[in-house]
Image 1 (cartoon, rainbow, N blue to C red):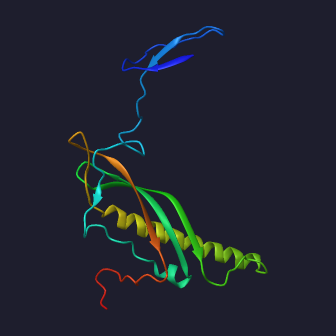
Image 2: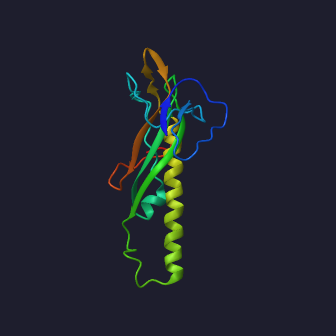
Image 3: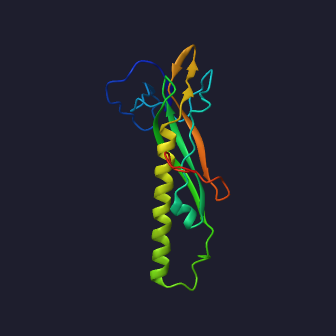
Length: 170
């Protein structure tokens, strides 16, 4: 089978017999208004200074000595807003005494797993809240502003400065 791309859609079923050669013409279309993960653009979006807040470090994460990185995809729209946030990778570690979870009871292992999961959910919520607030210069292609995905890692480190909640006093 030889495949060639063209701009004319095929509107009928095509049957091919064994041993014959046929040319197929078809159009590929996205099922979504979102662009693919990579779009070659003339100008990439850039975060606007002062408009890219860091996520708050959950207190429970500090209590359980958890660190990690969450990688997100932000869909930056034509005016520079983060219109969608999707988490595509996470990596966490816990620096307390859980070790390899050897010589702990089943109940203790379940408690540690439940705590770790609860903190992971808090990290995710914090990242999504911060990422939705990010502002960018829009991407452009051939002089037009276009939507593109941007990949950003958000890191949580125990040695990073403690972030206070908005409205709290020092």
